[in-house]
Length: 465
Ligand code: AMP
Ligand code: MG
Image 1 (cartoon, rainbow, N blue to C red):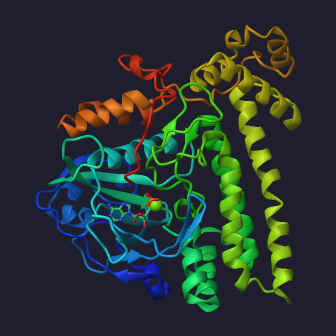
Image 2: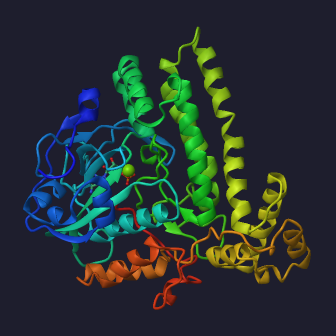
Image 3: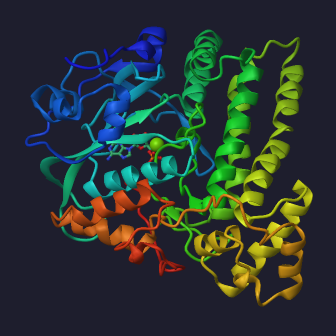
């Protein structure tokens, strides 16, 4: 073993919340993409990772790995038994900056939590998760990231379309894999003692200044408010904001049917399974609060209160802060995106009008914000009063940092790159990764990724997380 030591901090601290489990050995593993920068940040030599010992690590052929238990609300309904159905936690390490990070392997074969699933992961969705994570990270958004995507050498049953898909593995790096659904699992199956231990573990690992369960609730609510505010300005649609896909660390996690807005549309839904539009672009801030309310419910038995009613009112009081935390986080970033400098109330009101106009004119979300941020009001030309209001708030004054990226993983371009990967040509997805990993720097040859995107109402993503 070279590089940082791998620990099993989670399994040791909370043995009831995972089971020892080993990934299936893939027949002919090959690296499709290795995140060399992230490897070095972790303390691993990329060349070592590509060698025999490194490949054993990346394919989970090591001692001590586990599958984690969790529950969750999926599309609003409680599911008491979820868990890593096709993934294992490889362990955790302390990176070169002193941060503890989890290594996790998705596509590792069926586990005791697999239910009806085959335990497999197709190449396209694993590359999609890598692209999205790299892009969000490069835009400064807290996120899990891919250390590597590998092909297994085994074709897997097609889920959509006709051709059998290449099987893949995603090696994921995360601050942790503690989810709202992990706390729900503890509360629903294991009782207050384990739930209390889990709360302590989460506090120590992610929110060390939080005081008890209500402190943790507040810290998670604040971090989710920040996270979703950033998603909204980037036009990011997570697509499956179930409580098992909400991390206590505040990182975004599990990018399955996610997409990025081309035209600005509040009601934009891309996921084939989100028929009711529950996880539409414009619903995300409210859904985060809904999930936090389920989190609060799971915490109630460990809230130190004289009566259950008392616990409910204390938790409710904490959650009443969410709207303000969200508004503050959003207004700050919205002001920067619009290139203005005004009081939050004015920025929010201006933003509402700008977005209504963009939606009416079917304008590209990213390009419109980028040009406004750069001081160009052409996109507001249809509404001179609005353009004047933008100017009165400091729009066009110049000298401001542009916070909207040039390159976003455009739906159609990303889809095409994944289809090429499916056929064995990795060049387009490598190009996409190059573009989105430095999303603010305009480069020659990448014009086709600058948009405006063509993927609008008809574009659909499939789950496969
Ligand atoms: P998500 O797509 O992240 O909402 O996953 C929901 C649940 O389904 C998780 O418990 C996953 O582990 C599980 N799951 C998804 N795909 C598979 C699969 N192919 N085999 C086994 N479990 C799966
Ligand atoms: Mg998930």
